[in-house]
Image (cartoon, rainbow, N blue to C red; front, side, top):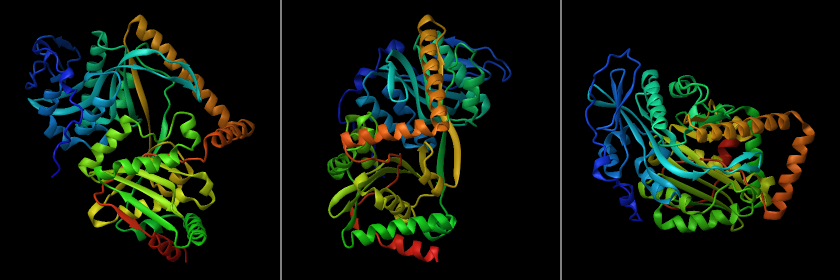
Length: 468
């Protein structure tokens, strides 16, 4: 079993306040009936009681370590993993302290919500144009950070606790990174706070994933005949053009991390996404996230070489039974050969190997053609925001909600106008020429441990069989 990740930078001590403000993780004090709606702050224990539940908020690293066992047991996604949380705390500018909310029922942990308090500068955009950059004090709850019993009752209780924190002046706003639209937490956050506390015109995206069958052959069989034909055609085109010059290198370990970042950056730096501040960047935060993943054995990084030139990459993590998609990109000089698709099929096939078997692939938010062709499950999710009832909170709500409304209208107009779509493509091509080739980015995560090089021919032969 892997040991916890040792912190490379000794800065955790700054998150430990004086003992008079520390939080003891105590059993719940059931002092109210389940139907009772009132909440009150227990200033001595820094907790909230009501509805027969007790809420405690862990605000120091030692208190989080007390929760490690139950946290790790409940966690289903790498973004909410305790070691990733610690690593992110060390390299995120403006991080002030943890804010992990634990609900107790009958003296036992019932659920928790993983978050942090930060002093950060928001970037409010319409399209690619930045309009405002307000500085705020924010409670940020990480993606996949609602762990344990995710009932409506627990969700409403947590939302009430967050509202109480905002009332106490701890932050200007609270934000959930991505919450499923059909979840109890989304419903509670959208309905329980009053109109002035809620964010409005929030974007909701399609979130697609694949439930994998027993074998890669059955996965190929599940695709439509048309898609199998297209995949086979692109595969054949690539292998014919680069016969004997197609190679995939896989990266698994911390020792390979620097090589992976350098090779991926060779592709990513030439893309228009890099020109607009998106896509993969080998910055401190991404590097530290990869370090944690490699240390824990989650990381899978793959680079496709054509004639010894890196032309496509895929970086992901295998966390428990799910392969989460993080970054995927290709050099558009090789675009007619669809190298990104070639590498994606290779990575899907790896999910069926016994030593890194996954039952699901999560492609994250956004709706692209390749996702529609491959995925068999989907949901809708997006951010949720709550604001303090103060002048600063009201002003921030107006700025964010107003910008979000304008951006949403602009996107709908763009989708309905062929002329505007053409102008956008022309502009993106100009960015691409000024920066280099194009990239298709995505998010994925899966497990791996050793480095390998492979001539990817098995996938093509199986596609040929399935096509016939």
